Length: 215
Image (tube, rainbow, N blue to C red; front, top):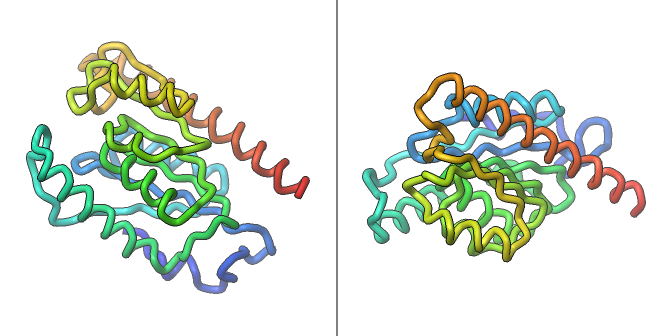
């Protein structure tokens, strides 16, 4: 787990040591898909290359085998969100920070809810978002999903993404890990996802920087 207090040492609460807005990228994993799995590993590497301090959120003691069980899914989401709040408490993220949130599965819900609850201006990347994630009106967000994802009703998710004007990149035949089961195809899919993630982040970072200059 990221030592959030260590990120604060020697830094102003709202500015980095150069007097610029702080740059944080927060990784919200899935329940069984941690930061070392392909999508999050490479996404984390990408945002580090872009100059962001990375905070890896980790969950513990969540209920298991929750798919299809509404009560257990709610319990897992509530516990995971509370744990994310605790981890991020030392950072005290604000709307003045330069923030990227990257979520996977249930982590997309945690990401969207945190941005909403704390009124943050974060760029969000959602990998295989669960349907409740779309309960929050999210701006500057891109989503990636497989149309064979057993955790999502693809048609419903597509309709909600369209209504919120969230770009949804769809991968035919891919499951909840954005994989089909063929190694070469899966690596090609991973490359495409990370490439599109990079393009989306860079375009929105440039737009945000231009906006800040004009203020």
